Image (cartoon, rainbow, N blue to C red; front, top):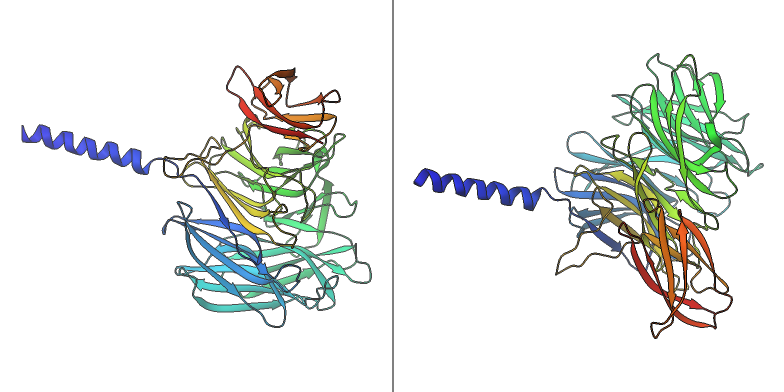
Length: 492
């Protein structure tokens, strides 16, 4: 009898453990102060049950950025933060990396603070322990009379890393010049190469099995994105255009030594959509062989996350994300984080939107160890501030893109259909998530009387409202396979 009770007890403990700890935690987190803050990168610290975020913080309207570090728990609670001030130059962290011996490395740059110049650039590596206490700061100087444009930190081998990016010749301001700076994992400078005689803007770098380099260049001011191939001394061996007119900002992840997934803005259509591709690179019979898909709608710009909007731990569950209705760094219009998931063949499983009550912009998305994903960026609450002041916005989702709540903390509402512009005038534009092939739009007055209905085939439609008087209306968007979206729409 004791053995039976013992077995039941152990099975009960096992059941509770699976249900309590096997579930994916989801949350929405906003770090809001009177400062202007942005988040550019995030990593998961599974050993300590937290996420570590880096970016920049400054006074609204200023160009004197300070490096900013934020740690939150894996349940979305504040743990700690640190502001790193350089009294002489602006400082921005764009990448957080695991270091040696339980340390972290925050990679970024310093420049002068004069807008339009930003000269005297240095690459900065700020080393801390796991509690964000400073250990060391390593500085690598670049050409002093060039303005810093961007830089992406990449791990390229077991003991080498690189910053690939571009600088601007102030005499020809819209002509970026690419640089690659290699350094060891102990942060010793190895090689710095500049291409000052040609216009190029680097974003990604990989060492190929033969010892040569593959490099991704994104377009700038009308220049075409390309793949470059370098030898081991960074001499250009060949180049080719990125297929399908795929453009920056890009998100790239390699799934083998020869193939990779990539997402970017797609200019192959009449509007600004997002495309994604599986580049099957080494096929001697067909060097342009790839899988390709795209999504998007008219009337809004859908922009992938600037510092990387594609990631996966299992390539049959690929997460991609960015900003829907992107306009600029600051805009007085609603926007949303978009996130969607595809299988390895790039078939979209689901698409969802988060935000709409302010201007949101996504900078980074990563897949998490529990099968979900987490995205960071910022929220600009233009309805409640006249200052250029942004807050760090974080959203953690499960594998289905859902925010799961409880009685104490209900789930934040996510969207599977968007209605815009809102307020509007004589036309409503409706965007429906990709998983719904057919839906029904209905509009009611405030007394519940139905005024119109229109079937929506696919992901986008326009609804004429010219016959309606100015006022507030209720919309509902439904489908037989689970779509239920509602809200208020205002006609001016």
